[in-house]
Image 1: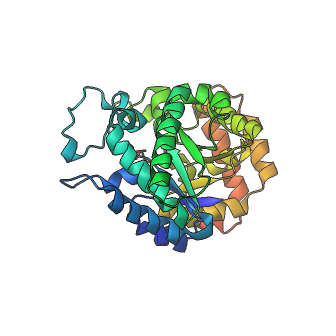
Image 2: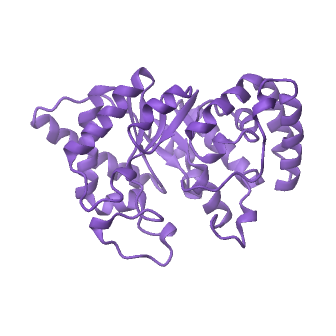
Image 3: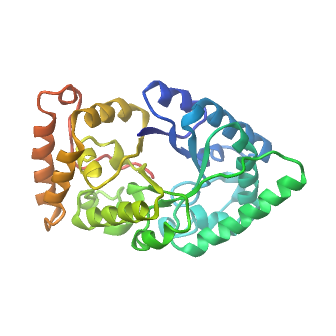
Length: 324
């Protein structure tokens, strides 16, 4: 399944036109940015309703606020942090600013009657954060029921796996949530301690680092063992060179930016799962990224030779670093 990543509701129809099977990641924080006031519940409800109605049966995974780090909103006047990517951001921000969080959760609950909604929490580092969110979500649901607002009976609640702590306890987290989405942009950055914007260390940002591959394999295996869905929505999912490896380690759902969708679909059509699994088995025990990248590049070139995908794919390393 190939889905699309969006930042604005009107992009939903665009990713569908490019061949996406639903919305795999809606980054809701962009609704809050570049404005003088916070969006109220009704405004948010209308935006989420538009996305869900447009996405249709395939549905949409809507991520709660991922503010902080490199994303700020003017009305809050938050203090700049010395190390913002390690600071008050995403779910940490939401659990502290519960008034803002509850407004968003109420809007999402109300919008759930208009389509197939999957709700996702960013930057989860512990099970406690999931428990706290569920408690707040239950309170919001009870309030809306008392107000007579209709809602879907069950809304899948998932989490982004983008911190090493979450990856290490993926087997435990899989028992607490309905799905995983792997955010490779931050997962790679935090695991390898690499600032992607720092030109002095950017070359160390290696998606095929053996530590990352072992981590991804464990996340996928944990999700499969618990019977929950697992996808990838980081930029790694939209890089043709990496897709056979991702298929080989067990991923079957990828979500990406619009322009990558037709390219990645052509790659998926051109390869076989058996060949991809053989590729992953052949690289999982290699000891360094250089060895893995060389083996993967040669294998992908061979897989795509003579196919339509070979005409549109120009694999490159490393993938362009973009905010996650």
